[in-house]
Every structure is written in structure tokens, then in C-alpha cells.
Amino acid sequence: MADLSLQSFVLARLADFCDWRVRRTDESEHPLPYLQAKLREIEPSLYTLKQQLYEDAVASTLEQVRSGIMTSKGLEDFCFLLERYLAPGDFVDAAFDLSLDRLRTGEDIERMRETLKHLCVHRLLDEERQPPEYRRPTWEHMVREFYLRMDFERLQIIAARRPLSAQRLQYILRRMQRNVAEHCSVFRHPTEHGGTFTPFMTPRMEALLAACGRFLEQLRSLPE
Image 1 (cartoon, one colour):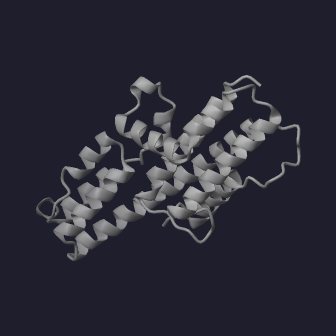
Image 2 (spheres, one colour):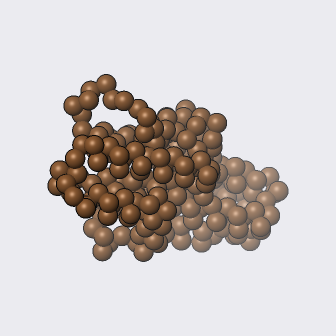
Image 3 (spheres, one colour):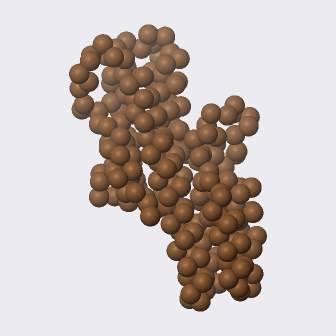
């Protein structure tokens, strides 16, 4: 069963990242590495939680198949969910035998359980660490969508107009954090402990983190 304390940790770090009012105790600490560290702190717990949510979904689905209450529509929904959790190659392997016709006996179900048991969820942020030419177009499209939606492109242009003084950097970072916080609120990306993740929200959160990371890297490359 998924450990929801991991979710609480992810939400707490995301809230820290979005809080433009926070005052760091060490004012000598540069804000860019500080915010980049906040993004990195989210990853381990996010991917442990993502794996646990995947395993819970697998266990629940196979139990319904074993009990005879699973429908073809239910398996279609499960395939749609797997596509959100797994890398494309793993998804093809997992979905090949996912039909009621192929899951008739206990032996069939056990074989499927073994197949799904050894799969790991796709860490989409690993795509971000690849050279741009090796990233999947679907990933690039999703991250670009968030980059534009967060108004990062306009902020990047503003930042590049003249040397990035500490005061200008502070203004731009606060604008970035407010934009992310407002997006999370409007589009139901949880930033509080009462929120919950879904298989459809998790990849979009990964893309949001990647867009934030790209923007911070762009700022680091500008002259001060």
C-alpha cells in the first residue's frame, strides 16, 4: 500500500518551492541553487510514491480479475493507467496479454502478476537529463507547454535585457514562484497536504518540475 507520508513530503517541498515570501536564514545563499535543490528534493519521494501507486493499482486489478468481477472496460481503463506509469517499451510488454480472454486461469493471472511485478515506473525527469535530440517528442511538448503556461519565456526575455542584479533576480524569481503557485491552485496540482495524486497528475507534475528546472538553468546562464 502506498505510503502517503511520501506524498506529504512531496507537497511540502513543492509548497516550499512556490513560497515567494520565504526568507532564507542564510542570506548569503544564492537563491538559484536553493530553488534547484528544492526541486531535486522532490524526486526521490515522488518516484517511490509513483512506484507504490503503480503496485497498488496492479494488485487491485489482478484481485478483481481473480475474483471474476473485472470487465473488459475495466481492463481497458487499467491499460490506460499503465500507459501513464510505464515507459513505452514496458507498456507494450505489460499490455500484450491484458484481456479477459488471456486471463482465464490462475496460472494466466500469476504469469501476468510476475510480468507486472518486475516493472518499474518511468522516471520522466530522466528524459530531461538526456541531450535534447534524444528526448521523446511527447516529453518535449509537455515541458514546453508548461514553460509557456508559466510565462517563463516572457520572464526569460525580461531577465536577459540587462545584467541580472540581485534585486532583478529576486523580482523574477518571485514572479516565477507566484506563477507556479497559481497554476497549481487553478489546475489542481496539490500544494497542500489535503491534495492527492492521480496517475494522470503525476506526469504533468514531472513536466512542471522540468519546466521550472529549465527556467532556473536559463537564469544561471545570464550575466550578473
